[in-house]
Image (cartoon, rainbow, N blue to C red; front, side, top):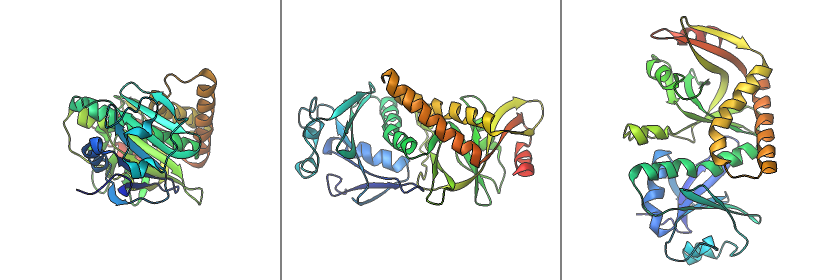
Length: 303
């Protein structure tokens, strides 16, 4: 068992240079290991990236007012002790500080397996939020690949994302079927990262893992519609921006509950600005999908 208390943990690096060190206190060591395993992250020594630090509510110390009190002393000494701001998401609490980029994630007492998976899902909110700040955007979308190019299939729940991914024949490959994180790299290219389908763990008892550090250049975005015939219909950047923003809000809004109206307004505007940039850079289509059809032929025709 490796040490995750102040010296080493799990690293995550995105295509835009954004990175995180994921570590935890003794009480949540197994929890952090499982989260990192699901996301395909490897153990490593800490580097200069911000830390996403997990503690258990009611752990070694009283962390109701000072979240650092639940950390081991070597890690505790690297953080300010006062002026932390808490944001309560019911099943976990996120602590931020104006003077450090690190986030402390306080999870409740050990619960049912389904509750622990929901906490892992919610624990990604700081990653999504920092991606938004740096010009990226999380999407309620699948990510598929052919010939080294990433193709995004976006749509709300029950729109057919998972079904489409299951029906893709070789050489098509599905990387994820629920959430995709899109970032801009140093050359202003849009790159897509696959993120976990947490519902697989909640309802299907899956043990699948996802390599979230893997990324592909985004070739096109398709918005799914059920139809009587397969057809890819190009749309303009205005309509694409609205649909991209809608898909992003389905991911982000769960982390914005309880925000003040002005803060919520600023975040919505920034998210829409990012959606507009993506819509101007990447071709978008409505993809009409027939049950038991060959929608991938339509994708291949236009991409």
